[in-house]
View: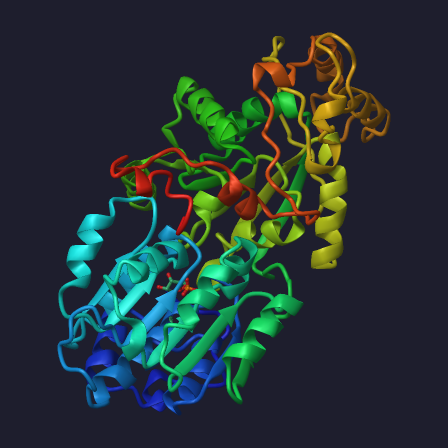
Length: 502
Ligand code: AMP
């Protein structure tokens, strides 16, 4: 893979990394450092703290992994081969990212004697405990599960020399701040701290202020900027038509690798089922799938065995799929930053990619917010040749956070509710006919689906409201807040749920 933006003629040879690391870098096929690597590696090697602004896909993992491997392999060990006592801790928000980071540690450190392991929630704790009993240099972890281990004295964090907070903004977004603070209190005062974040909210600044001492600051992309490399388009289409449209687009464009984001786990399953019915190999990943099923789906998608992966935000966060050419937003996220994260799955590491968003009239307000954030209008493009089916499946009324009625004021079954009246109101604001081919044909079909009785709360079909504390939560945070199905090993009951360390 080659990057289109070489960083001011800096080569890996200029970075003074040791020979075994250089060999591993060369084996990985990297010829020039990415901009974040060119900027961050010298800073980390100098031994000081670092605050780095870099989105996923910029090569940031190697940006902190290469120098920390260099430091750890070149400095005398304080507590040789000490079990339970790692020298470096890398915290990540999700299991997938944790697994990927540890894989990178292994790849870049393959000619070194350093040992590493990864621990995250949602899987049986016992094998992790056994791994922590062996001598360990680098520990990659999600905060919740690490705290569980620390509280059970399975791990001793008093020997940490280097701490990395990767995707710190996502960790705060997912509500890990308290766990992180508890973990920080277990670390020795004398250590090197590296904080990587795609965005710099006030909370991140606060965290950085308390954590970092005279940090160097490096940044490779402007705040909240959607990557320039991704070609973004919108198809205006009614919700009830989206599944058929996705199926059509995959076949028409002969997409061989497409990642599709849905807002809900149920929506992910439903779309995957529809595609399979249409003869397209597809799999869904979300928080209700076991870690084994998620890993298998991801491996098959990465290797090209299955061309379509349907995922909720949380499951897809941190996925590193090389040169993913196509992303589809089946629904727009209601938090605009999530859109930037989603399209960051494509156009990674200097390659170009395309992101298509299917936008129903109810989502236009989300589209406007996204366009405001990325400071550009996303072109609305009609789909040539799409003929909507005559008969459409019924859609559940789609309630977004601000539409969710107070349960005490819930309408009786059969009576119109707030969601319905809002839908009617929105219909009047629909984009003009002809913006998407097939709208004309579909307009009455949609009317008929709207005229069907709405599925009430009593039937449990609506998305359950997540605790908000008055704040608009991201998709990731909402999934995190929802009760998770037990994953691998439902026993012992203490570890059921995998809510932490997701
Ligand atoms: P990251 O932002 O760390 O998730 O990295 C994104 C992708 O870039 C990964 O697939 C890396 O393997 C790849 N990558 C990292 N550094 C380089 C480099 N210097 N040259 C080419 N590819 C790279």
